[in-house]
Length: 215
Image 1 (cartoon, rainbow, N blue to C red):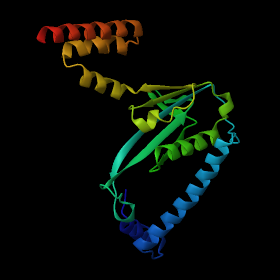
Image 2: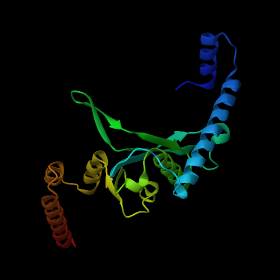
Image 3: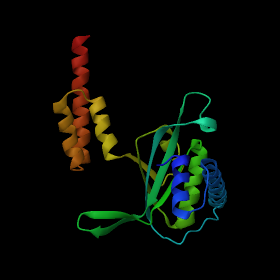
């Protein structure tokens, strides 16, 4: 990522047309406003159930995450210096590119600093512009369990699950004993859900017994 001044120097050297870093900022602001207007149109259409994309799928996969970024100038929040950039992607499957390499099929991406509800509207508008949402029966949402991610679940057809990284992180945080962690991870990796639940319950009961002994 380049600064406005670096971008201005690059554009000037490649085109022979001089542009200041302030000019680059103005161009980006103008482009951002036009993109925001287009996003708002899509959001309104989705809210009115008028968004009708051409792609059809019964299952839609979604992923959402956020990253905190230091802000400067007018963009800096009143409290602190960081704002969370929210990001989401939706797709209906995977395509094989070459051996061991895949890409997301019919990928839709959105990002922004909006409040959770407004970001949710934006995401739904982008999805409805590509997919025929009436055809979607199940939506699988992967994320880290953040309140703004789970807060977007308003329909019964949306199923939330922690992504693999955050599943392992929660096991590490919640289970102190490394041996017990491995006992949990094994059935989780093999998708043996019944065995996994039995392991978790056994470890929980063992912790309760140990806590009673100490009290």
